[in-house]
Image 1 (spheres, helix red, strand yellow):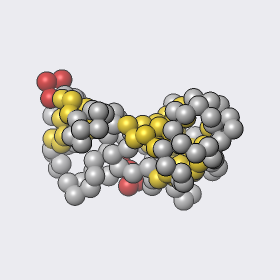
Image 2 (cartoon, one colour):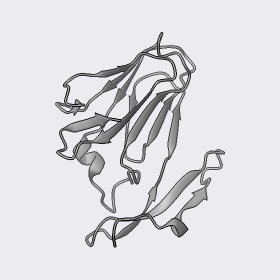
Image 3 (cartoon, helix red, strand yellow):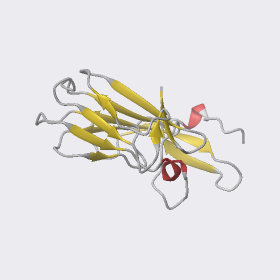
Image 4 (tube, one colour):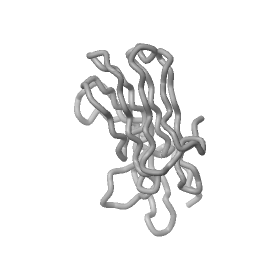
Length: 151
């Protein structure tokens, strides 16, 4: 019960036959919740127009819009993001969130990362804007639950 990932429990599964596999691992969440099966690094490729909202289970949001337009990515409430209950969709093992310009047109069509409510990114009460083609932003929950830090 040390919170480690058991190497023998990692599996690759293509549940929806989409060709994109999801890696899973057994993770110990303490004596109350015990062992759970959590996704390791799932990817969501977004091609549809409109804003994106990160949800539990997201890890890498890859923005690959078929129509060139600026995009907002709305971050979840970091407090809810870190909650883990049996009835809730699983967040990933790392609990991080990656947002990437997969299409390669962020210099023209910016991707704006919008924090939830009064939460911050790197202690700043403002949006983060991806303005370079193929740029990646990695976000990790702050331990004080005030928002996110970039890495």
